[in-house]
Length: 290
Image (cartoon, rainbow, N blue to C red; front, top):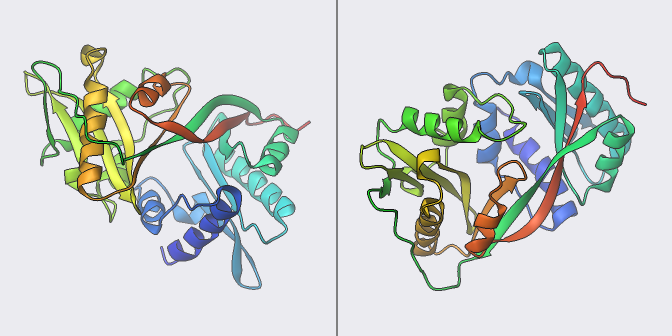
């Protein structure tokens, strides 16, 4: 955990060079590293040059994350980290390994293509300015929107896991303990930024799980139970989150989604626009590169 600051700076330098803005905080990284099933000693690695970190990679649940400092000779370092990620994923019993890569990172994409990776899905980061006047959307009849309460944690996890399990090509969900560490117990978590929807039977039927990133409000997870879809609940949750962001003086709202969710139209209807696009590149393990 002593490496959090150095790795955050390394990843931030890459974000800045590629996109002109930083998309990570130390709290993000510390939360990921705090997941009980994530073993820093075997699932992560740092490359140093003259005692300075120049590369970082991790593997979790068959997904690899590879970063190289933009001022270093990235190609051989990245290739070595991709090799390492494949070995670790295979040793952990994964049938395939995937990398989610910005469309702007042409060198990374070329490396993966050359190693036999193929595209599985597309994803986007959306952003919405919060300078328009508030225009809240009421919850559907019989549904109450409120903030997170003690005791909501397990039902909330089950709601999100069940809703996300309906996506095609969905990986195995995080365990409750991993999800709680990554979302509810991170240092910057704020229960007042989690909007839950409670049905007439007191069952949780929707959630917008949010946090603050600089001057942006970020919707980490949005889920609606199948029984309450098509009623405007997703829009009501988003507008409630946006109003809280405005109240706190934030400039923008952001979130991420991908083609599996079918939710892009929903986000565009509430005024969000694509900021950046990504693709998930995947490769079956045990298949040699061309």
